[in-house]
Image (cartoon, rainbow, N blue to C red; front, side):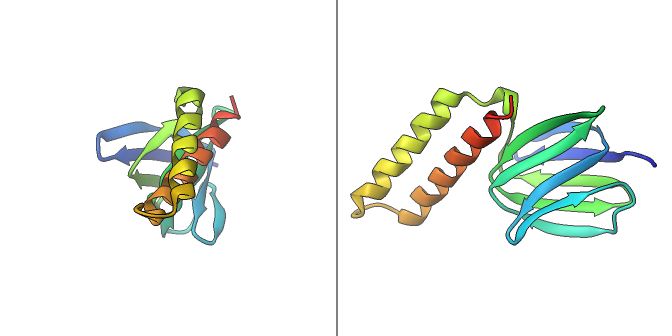
Length: 132
């Protein structure tokens, strides 16, 4: 069985290219897994955790959503933001969570949807960082 070729692209450019045995990603209706020889697929990604098995080891990445395409063992992940678990600064993520909670508590004069997304992203980053 061959590996998957993974490319992760953000607006800042190519973040990662390499081989993985599997990839699990968050979609609006739940997490799905991609293995070699997976059928072609285009999926929306949600805020969540992407898990890769690379050289027999799990690697985790926090993402704020985007798209994932599978075609002939090539997986292209196009996301607004992506951060490896080991690169997440926990104190910064906790501060972002606290700011978002304070904004949501104000209830007036705020963009509630934006604050809820900021809170979800912060909580996700903290969760993903817990894997290291």
